[in-house]
Each structure stands twice: as C-alpha cells, then as structure tokens.
Image (cartoon, rainbow, N blue to C red; front, side, top):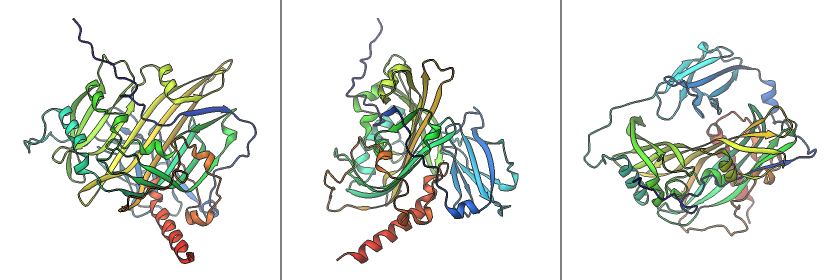
Length: 443
C-alpha cells in the first residue's frame, strides 16, 4: 500500500513573494528616459559584453558580480548571465574580479576582454565534507532544523534600525523599461520574536520608458517587502514552516569556503509525491555554529496556470499570463558574532500570450535590497501606522521622477545594470550629509 503524505495546506505554504503582478492597459502617460548625468554623457566609455557561466554545466550564473579592482565600477550579470561592462576610454589596464557564491573567484586582466562575446567560465569551489566535529549532524535535514532552531542565539536578538537601498527593475526581453529605487528605514524585530518588521520610505525616485511597454503597464506590488520577506531566518514560514519541512528532501551536496570558513551546501527539493508548488535550491550553512550564511532557491513551477494565480492580480481579458521563473537569494552578514539580514533579491520572468497576435511578450521583474547601515533600536520604537509603508505598496506609484536631486547628488543617475552595493558608499555620504543638514536647522 502506498504511503500518503498529507499535502501542505494554504496556511503552511504561503507563497514567499508578497507581491502580485499588475498588468493593465495604458493610455499615453508622460514618458521618462533613463536619466544620465551630464558628466556621464560627456565621458567616453569602452564597452565589453559577455556571459558568465558554470564551467561544467554551462548554465548561466545570475547576479554574478564583476568589479574593476581599485575603482567603484561594479556590475551584475542579468537573468541570462549576460553583462555589459563600461569603463572610461582612458582606462587601458587593470583587473576585473568576477565573484559568485560558492564559486572560485576569477581575476581577468581588462586587456584580455574583447568588445563582444566574452565568455567567463566559473569553477565550483569544492572541499571534502569535514569530519572535524561530532556536533555536526550526519543528516542534512537535522542540520537544517538545528540551524532554524538556533536563530535566537546566532542572529540579532535586539530591535534594530536599518537603513537600506532598494531597487526594482522591469525589462521587456533584454531592454529596460522601468526602474524605481528608494532608500528605506527598516525597523527590524529580533529574530527570536514573532513581531513583524516595519518599513518607512525615506527617499524614492523612478524612471519609466512607456514606449517600450507596448499597450500594457506592469506594476509590482509589495515593494521592499518582497525582498525583506526573503529573510529565511526571520520569516521561515514562507518556505520552511515547521510542518512543511517534511515535504522536502535534503541532502549534502558539497562543501565550500566563504571568508575562510568551511560551509556545507545543502540541496533541497520537494518530495516527488508532493503536488503543490514548493521550492528547490541550496542552503549555505556553517555546520559548526549552525548558521545560515546564504540561500539561493526558486519556485518549482509544476503547473504554469496554477502559478499564474499566485502572482497575477489583474490582466487584460485577451492575454494569458504565467511565470516561467521565480528565483530568490538572501545573504547574511556578521557583526560582533551575531548575524543579520544584509542583502536579498527576487527575480520573476513572465510570458504573455495575446489573442490574435503571432508573437508573445516576455518580461522580467527583479528587485533587490542591501543594508547600508544599522544601529540598535534600544527603545524598540516603531513608527506610527500612517508613517509606515504598507505591504501592498506599489513603489512606482509612490516615486516621482527625480524629485529630490539635492539628495541624490552625485548619484543622480540610474544605471540599471550596476550593482546596488556599488552605490552604497555614495548613498551613505548623502544620508550623512542630509542628517547633518536636518540637525543644523532643528530648533
């Protein structure tokens, strides 16, 4: 007799992405080109195009980072592993560092790049699984459970006020059509608390080229909450609810090193006889201290029509819309032997079939957030409800062009392909300057 596994209920399998895609007809709104600073326009650049792939599988590496050493030039690969690296035309030498979680860092002289069709193959960093400590569980699922249970010991247990930089981008195939970004304050609750985090909007702006959107407008609901809820240790119910762990198979995949620490890579996937659409991916765990340092995973889209119900809130009657890829990543950072949420991103790819049209439309939506600074919120103050943004926010509707150029200052430029972490130092300087000015004018 076949053993039956109880299927997860709606309560135990909340969809992780808090947002829904809005697809509606547009009229003739005012179009904004992607803003480029005058200095940026006048400076001449060399451009190098290419693709970053796994050396063995030849699969593209999404969100791999390329940085030019000793400069603030940093970009990320797109959903196809492709990149466009721009450097000043006067720069003829230098090294480009390519990094991706769990892979060996690669350094390539800029002189070896051609203008187009550069292919960069990354090698997985593999070590033998350690037998150093008897405290390391021999079972992968047991290690995951212990790690989740120790979040109160290993992660921030004080209320914390974080400042973060958030960005969301919409592309039609490979062309950018909309970009919004914001500086937000996150009122982070302790990891051992059931209290939810709160967010206030500090500054926001957008740029949209409606001419590339055909006859539709896409909007992403949830804004920064989309990335914040990828914090697996704070919100395990979105992926690893206590009762839902039984619906997954866990196995040790390999061992790697991050910051000179041995990290176990645990592969997980939903069990074959679970029909609901759950997740598959990798957990990067410090086995000695039972700490999740990173997680990379995606939704198993077993039924595209059911998946569409999870993400599409509104669409034209003559269109069929479904997601083709839904992927997540979260990275944690350490301070004084405590870990905290540092960075996350979400990627959604959609296909739209139109009645009486020969070709379909393909769109991708991505959002990412990086913490720029934090301090203990010793009084545990939380802003009033009217001051906090709602989880239903549509950032594009809240941001208005470049309405505050005095704040954005030297960062008064939107570069969709540039890593948001490369802008952190500039944002930090602007925040410091803004806070100083506010303090000097205070009564």
